[in-house]
Picture 1 (cartoon, helix red, strand yellow):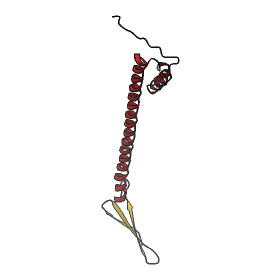
Picture 2: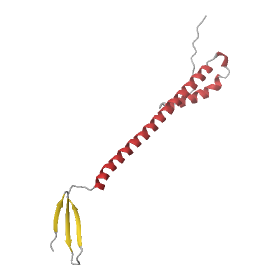
Picture 3: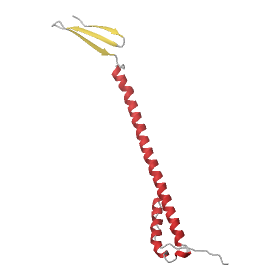
Picture 4: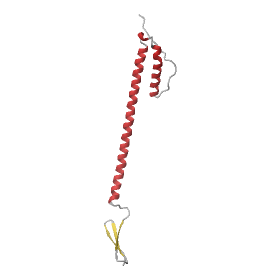
Length: 134
């Protein structure tokens, strides 16, 4: 028996009769055409990749914004502490403890400069006090 083929849509059905009397049916796809599972995979895989990209972008954006806000708060706290202690250091009634505040002010100044990305300054803080004569 000779094999024959009938074309239905995009597939070719081939049937062969074997010597034992069994009939084999084979389906061959035309080149460039795909089946339903392949089409679903072509839709689902890019959608999953796009979802993963969006999720990772969101995760890293939230993380960056959180770190930025924390940094801003740290700088704000350091500036407030430095200003408060420098005012106390220059207060006329607290001149007895001014020498004790200098190491703390130096440490605060260096922490603030480090947070802002600047080099630390060595040496003692010198204060210039301007007064009006009455």
